[in-house]
Length: 186
Image (cartoon, rainbow, N blue to C red):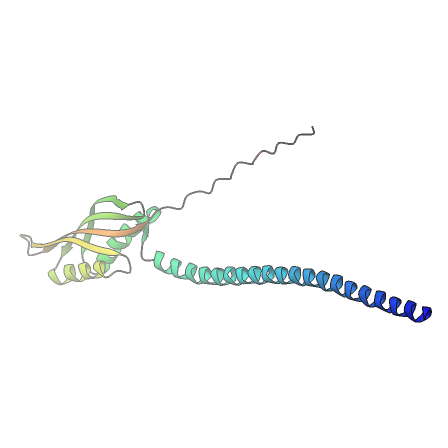
């Protein structure tokens, strides 16, 4: 009987050791599985963030083209003189004399405007065509005031006050000061 008791005890010890080993292996595998699930959720979050960044960059690239198109409707502060010259040339092409009396800036810093006061002289037909071409020019122009009068020589004169959308001049980029790094070997 002795050998069968030892065999039974050995089998029981082997069975208990198998259960303990299985339990330890299961606990280790569960911990690793939880770590893998955590890493997978981090990877998914980073992938989602990268997808949103890619989408935002693509949208910004599309918006940049639209912004350039919209900026074309506004007169840059640096090109006011060429805008005035274009108005005068437009009047000359339509047979009128366009004279700019005053130019001033106004509006909020977020939406600056140019205020122009000008006169258009010539025949009634030419004056009205010039006023129309100025009003419907491809710029953000609002006619604030308009008066049309006939002068003594049978000519016509239109006095206009315009509000023209403007964009500020681009600011020069300034280099950021280098940050100082303090190293201590104590």
